[in-house]
Length: 97
Image (cartoon, rainbow, N blue to C red; front, side, top):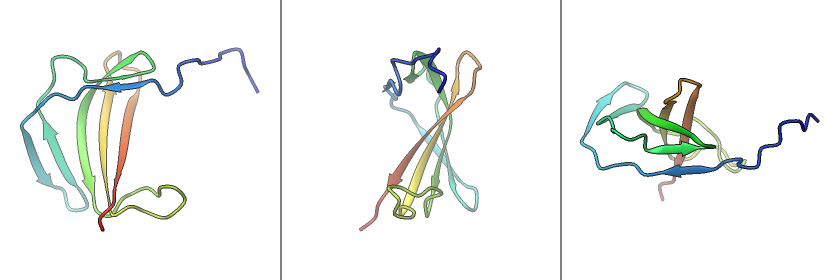
């Protein structure tokens, strides 16, 4: 009901993930995928810049999508705001067969 802070750039998401070498570690309930640190933050969201801090692959997914239960797997990319004001999680459902 408070409209004093109207946001006209909701969900303005842009990305340019660079090529990277990866290291995969089995953490038991997920795979941890470590990548090289990028010199330029690869993600912008609502004018904030974000670096990738961790990537995880879950099987099965942690979240439900479209009101239909979980996906076969889920990739979660954890980003940190370069200004230090919070994190951004990008959750990608993966369907098998």
